Amino acid sequence: MKPNPQRLAPLALPVAAAVLLYVAPNYAAGTSLPFIILNWIVLAESFNMFAGLTGYVNFGHVVFYGVGGYIGGLLMANSMASPYAAVLAGGLGSALLALGMSLPTTRLRGAYFAIATLSINEAVFVIFDNWDAVGSAPGFTIPIADYLPLQVYYVMAIVAALCVATMYFMTRSKFGVAMQAIRQQEKTASSIGVNAAFYKTVALVISGFFAGLAGALAIWQIAFIDPTNAFDVRVTLNSISMVMLGGLGTVVGPIIGGTLLYGVGDYLDRRYPFLHLIVLGVVIIGVVMAMPQGIVGASRRFFQARRIRREESEGDGSNSRDLAHL
Amino acid sequence: MILPELVVLGVAYGLLFGVLALGLTLVWGVMKVVNIAHGDFVTVGAYSSYWLFTLAGVHPILSLLFTIPFGFGLGLLVYLGLVRRVANAPELMSLFLTFGLSTLISSLLLNLYSPNQRGVPISFPSINGLGVVLPGSVAIAAAYSVVVAVLLRLFLRRTFWGKAIRAVTEDREAALLMGINPEAVSLLSFGIGVAIATSVGSIVILLQAVTPTVGGDFTLLSFVIVVLGGLGSPLGALIGGVVIGVVNNVASLYLNAAVTPAIGFIVLVVVLIVRPSGIAGLKPD
Image 1 (cartoon, rainbow over the protein chains, first blue to last red):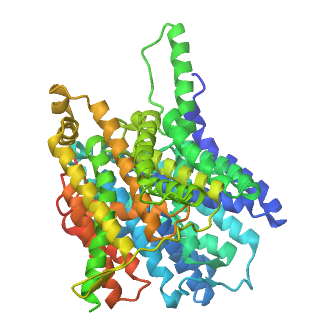
Image 2: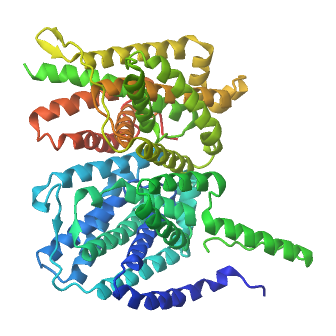
């Protein structure tokens, strides 16, 4: 049996766990970089859960992040719940919001969906920007009396692992097959009994849940939230870029894309604040033009081509196993 | 009388943004590409007119003679270099591509010209009539919009290429069988779409100061208008523009001024729930 990248997938989790534990002590020493990267990975992966699986672009992805942050932040600021419960509440609140959002939007096709979600983002921003009870435009801070950086980091790492694992199971279940059918031919899928609206709703709710957790964790970490940052369309833009760069619809794509893009972006941001966005724009355009399947898709094609060549040279060209969803 | 004045103002602004939305809907109709960079071309037009005025003293209205052909040429280049490659790819790809293009344009402007607001210090005499006072610049915007809408309609109804655009919008394959080159039609309509956006920019600089990132607001506004009117319907875009213009202005009379920007989006979501393909829309498929 030839070594197959797919067989290595189950190894990824323990390796990731080891890396996360290894960087934790450094993190305690003062840098928040690992936390932020994990936060982006969750944002990108949760975007990927919906866009990658259904083929619909949710341009309002940051709404889940912002609302999760507000719910978690309000609970923490008023000491109404332990931070753990507040984070969970942030996720559940965003999941509920996703359920509400799905009612008008899952019936919309293609561009209509993208436009509607972009509009929802704008409307939610305006509402929070004028809502005095949640601090309106200036936002609010949470007291950081019992804040432990390491504790937040570990919760973030667990959430990230759960998020990636969820995506893994979503792509490898009956659910994943139904989603694939919807992505390729929604009408045909519906006509053979796949309830497209139901599956899209479930995917959006799970996507919203994890983005909400990420938002609540972010406010636990930075202890501050305001509408401009919480509902910044650039957060969605970043998530999209990370997913596209890594590989849309793949499990590990957002991890690769998120780490690479945040690493590069952070460096550029510090040196040349405005250049950062140019790089994002170029990355998105470049990926769409040159490798629409992202890094994972491109390398998968590379390995597949190599294997087929090898098998053909051994006189066995019959098999071309599907390497989908590495 | 403040209500009639707000309605007139809403109609005038609505016409301008309706014309802007026309450019978006034209491109969508022909090649099923939603151009998220549409509003950023408005910014490009506004900055062109700003610099022509500041450096050479060219009046923004006169600078239309530059921004229209410039926008058309820019549109051709963007289509040939980028959009053509994703025209037949899944919709997702063209959305990503134009999103990237939008980011690129706004951040390039940000790097070149800083985030400062830019405006031209030109004022026009107000127009009085029937007890309604209309600022001169808004009247010019409305007049320009009517001219563009009429010219565009004549072009689409009376000329070969205009008819070709309508034919491809209606049925790409049938148009191909009739000897129309859909590639050429796509190229032409993208050029017209961008030219409309940059020329609207020349008018916008008369109405307000602009920043490099203001394009997103215009894109969003055109989206709302186009979806209200129905993607692919030019008349729908104009109607949608006027509806949004009037609703926004009249709502400011009754509601907290800060909340009014959300009204358009709320109207949009309600319309989409009731009629998923817009007021006068083609079927999304």
